[in-house]
Structure formats: structure tokens, C-alpha cells
Amino acid sequence: MKFVDTNILLYAISKDQAERRKTNIAIELLEAPLGELALSVQVLQEFYVQATRVSRGAALPPRLAEDYIDHWRAFEVQDMTVELFRAAVTSSRRFKVSYWDAAIIEAARMMGCDTVLSEDLSHGQSYGGVRVRDPFLSSSAR
Image 1 (tube, rainbow, N blue to C red):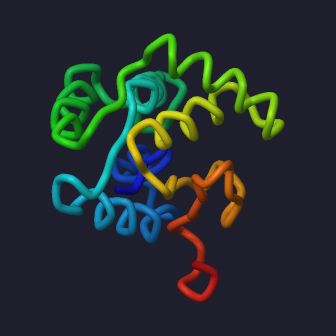
Image 2: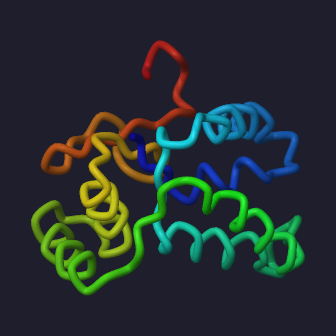
């Protein structure tokens, strides 16, 4: 199973022509069969906040953002727990990343994912066995 970071969801709904290639890649990724992708409550929260942000060029109406979230809940979703919080705090210190990035890494680990799909973390970096893959890099760099 691969873990999906928030930026994948945001690109999937983007109407920006400059992001069209990333949008197509994100949509293709999210068409994976159930059981192949996972995400977390944190990712869904971040999506909602960013997608509905008024200062965003093409902000979604809250109800539409909720509809997307309801659709993506078909994937495995890691709840926010005290155990996840504690693991993220530890990983944040260990790997010198933000708490929020560490929470993504640890949610992936708790779900048994060996890969996090993200353009926000360092492509190819392994965080204690959870490796980051930027799906938007050219195919030769993937």
C-alpha cells in the first residue's frame, strides 16, 4: 500500500492549466484499486482547509470539498491517535522534519505503507523504512 499526501489530492482537483500534467498524474494515482492507497485524517483535514481557503484562486464550496472527502474515505484512513501523535513527535526530532511531515510518515508506517507519495518531502529519502516518492518527477527520475 502507498500513502497519499495532501498535495496529491489538491492537484487532483486543480483547474489551473499550468498544473494540468500534475492534475492528470494525481487523478491517475487516485484511480488505483481499493487496498492500494491509504491516507490519514490529517491529510483529509489539510485538503479541506486548503481546498476551501478563500484566498485560493479556485476555492471549493465546503460541501463539494466534503463530497471529495467522502469519496476518498473509501481508501484506508489512519485516524489521529495519541500513539500516532507520540510517534510523530519522536520522528520529527529523529529525522529533523516538521511535526506535520512526521505525522504523515508515521501514519504511513502505522498502516503498513512502505511508500509516501508526496512532492513535499525529499524524493527517495527513507525515514526508517518509509520511502518518499515524488510522482510528479519526470519518469526518468521516478
